[in-house]
Image (cartoon, rainbow, N blue to C red):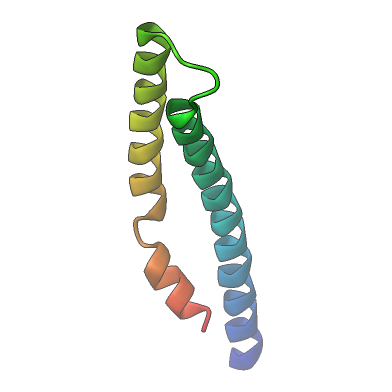
Length: 79
């Protein structure tokens, strides 16, 4: 009976980690897109657009920080 519970817990941890990693990938892609917009030399951004991008980047960095808290422990549990 314990083996079944352990497998259920491991499956749940794996599922949670998979979802978190997917969300992490999406947020990282969003950050990369924002950085590309800032670095783009073909489409210069106005000062207002630049400020908006920096605001989005700031929010994304905070989200990444919060989102990844404890992720390393969760991933290690799955090993």
